[in-house]
Image (cartoon, rainbow, N blue to C red; front, top):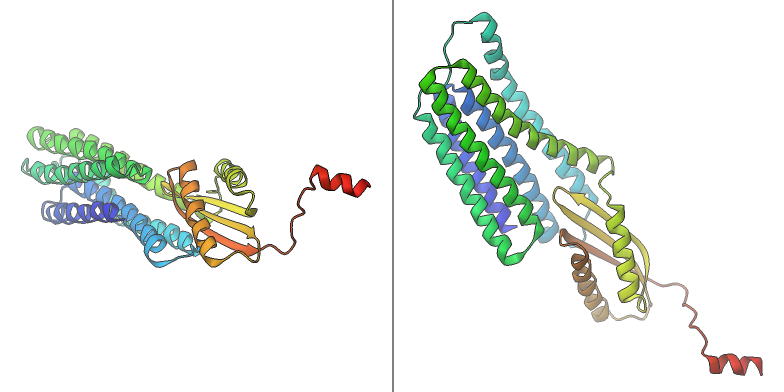
Length: 301
């Protein structure tokens, strides 16, 4: 959670920095890059909120948190893209209404702004990768890989600003905007896909579910009966809910130990399992113990 929080703070700083200069310069390249920062910030914010609610607030995970995260991500993305489309539409219309108009990115020093954003993104990438090297949490691997892609995007924007301002070419500016939009809509597509799958219940991982059922039956079969296992993917990680039947005389201390062991065992099956909610139910019927050969002989006599 702490690593994701720091990555989110880096996004906020980068967003604020580029937003100020985008407003002052009216550069469509910077405005497009601001939209990219905003979408990535929204993605990191919803991930951070979900991780916080799972690990810090709720002992038992509620699927309502998942729906909240999905709706919030869709709402923020829609607001960002809707707001961006206003200046973008005006920019495209200017090609027909003002064919002789110059570029909106004429100051080469704006490249320093995008470079600063790239440095921030690279810092987030380096930090997340270091934390991943220590913890080996696959969640952080997905985050630092995304930061690496954003670093490349910042480099392309910087090159585009320099090329556009030096050549005063509208074609170079438009090409840079399209390249930046590719990264922006790639992030939006990931948010929409994850959110829609979550809301429609299509994020259930059946293969991982059966792996967990098999593991539980094999390792804890003498102590429990599996009632149900539910595994859902939220962004880049999984949340599992395991319901088990246990003997009604099982002590609370033993249940607590079993809960920790089961959570650890689930993460051994897949490192992307971030939270495991274990629910115990008293077994209403006592399982019949297989009779030994001696008992069978007595029964025959």
